[in-house]
Image (cartoon, rainbow, N blue to C red; front, side, top):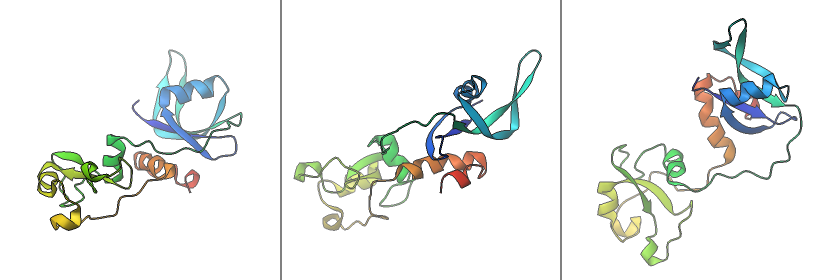
Amino acid sequence: MNSRVLVLNQDYSPLMVCSVERAFILVYLNKSEMIKESMAQRIHSVTRSFPLPSVIRLNRYIHAPFKSVSLTRHNIFKRDNYECQYCGTRKDLTLDHVVPSSRGGAHAWTNLVTACKKCNTSKGDFTPDEAGMFLRKKPSKPSYAIFLKDYVYNHGGMWDEFLT
């Protein structure tokens, strides 16, 4: 039961992703309705069997402020697909400031990239241009929907219609 469940607001807009256990409780307590169920698994009690939810919709509208992706090491790695943005390797990854912090480079989405230790050391205290290195893609702040879409691959496209 390591699956995740897409939670929709009452107006069918994506709100969050939660655990199957939490989603099942919300459905069981009539705080939400099951929109799509998991075809692969069911949850069993002594006398009954229940489908596991894949997508649920809350019965009450939740006023959620604009969601943004927090700037964390894990999220930068995720944005960069766990690849060094200079050479493409997936081993010994670290974070690199495009404009070094010693030269006033900010700790921001647009200045941080994933780099392997070898490329990070080679670049040193220079900008990529000064070091003769080139970024594979320009760093930018990802949208919340893009991070939710990463979970779609675990559900074989069952969430596609809700994440457009």
